[in-house]
Length: 195
Image (cartoon, rainbow, N blue to C red; front, side):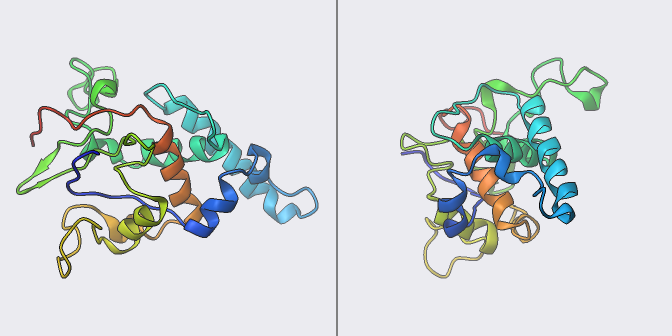
């Protein structure tokens, strides 16, 4: 089992059980309810964009493709890479240095970014396919409350992880993040942590 450190992310257990098997089309607008069309088209656009910006090969076997695409969109457009990939960009590909952007796919979401005494967690799936070694229920708890299930009772909530912000996402968004993280390659903890 992976060693855990500062850990984020979660999704709704009840929603997860239902949505894990929902087809891609279920997220599109309902033709009988035009009020949903804009949301459905927006979801399709986000799902498609998620696949376009995903930097690593995905294992889609047994996964909900719509949730994986939406999860990729959320993860890869909201800065998760900035804290959970170290270094964030491949050598010679740091956009902050005027270089063409390329995510560090070798260490993608394997953790290792240090913030004083805290080190970001490896979010890749463990041997059982659980992102950061978390069940869906634990994942939800971490993102909603900041409580690390491995921390001793009475420990303060995670101090660096922006769980108060991420926890405001919809249950569906959190489940999409979880489903995407289940699809990325499983890798060991980053061997070279640093600031």
